[in-house]
Amino acid sequence: MMFESNHSPDWIPEMDGPFAEEIAAYIRHKRALGYQYAEPTCYRLRQMDRVFADMGCDGTRITREMVDAWCTAGPGQSASTIADRRKAINGFAKYLISKGWEDVALCEERPAVRVRFVPYIFGREEISLVFRAARGAVRDEPTHSFYAALCLCYTCGLRRSEAASLLVGDFDQQARAVTVTNSKNGVSRLVATSESTASVLAEHASMLADARPDAFLLRGGRTLGAWNHALYPFWHGCLDSAGVERRADGSRQRIHDLRHTFCVRALEKVAEGGRDIRAALPLLSAYLGHKGIVETEYYLRLVEPAYREVSDAASASLPDFYGRGRHGKG
Image (cartoon, rainbow, N blue to C red; front, side, top):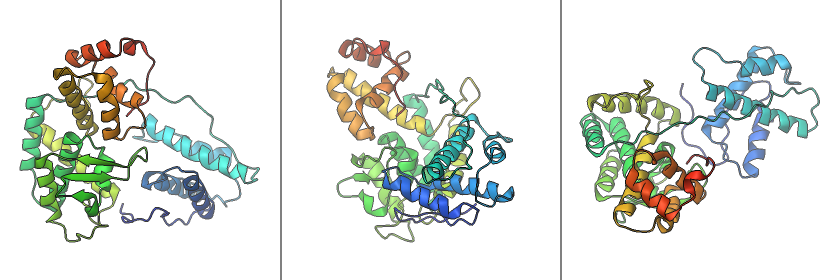
């Protein structure tokens, strides 16, 4: 499904359901409070409104039946998808209640689902094969944008969404750096790139039909949803071509694992150089766009069993680290 692609900060998708006006007001309200209500959240609220429209809702109440219809898992829906739906309807319902609505049902509150997911850290030879396959899979501008995004995730530690949101004007070819403004935590930062990644970005910029500074660098006029939908088959094809085996549970390595691998490699360099990890963590935290150092420390917990040189250096610098509680994800 194709949606609008170039949005101003106050963009809201067109809605025609029973709660269209209230949802638009709710989005504006949350943004005014500092929340980033971007495409995924907006589209989820629009989808909810459409579900209510299909049920014949007149927009005057939210019944228990409506809540159950929206929060009941359907075919192929994961636990995280249902959790996102519950969060969406409860946030909107509480907003309506705060505005004086009385006939509004809430979804039962449940503890957040915690998944002890261990990221996949690519070996050096393995990642070389993956990128060789990625370069070989480039056929045109769209596939080249996928290759460029993977380069940014691995060599700069960018999140996939950050790479997708880069504008042409965010790339400074002379300085070999990109400016990340659309970040998960709202933390803007200047990220230096390697010479090779800068060359890939420059090559891609030369392919663009629309090279205005405010045009998207990698996804051009494509929507985020459409771009992501095509990115993952490209990524999985690279893994297959490189001979990367599936994980023990049968799942595929994620693009986000490139960011984890970048972080581990950076920590390895610190450990190999005999430098103090306590001094390096704040710098790495800022580079990654984390809200605080505990998010960066989380990476140390994840690699503790597999990367002994990193974990030994961490335990020497932060002796009580591995006894701490679980940190939030980066």
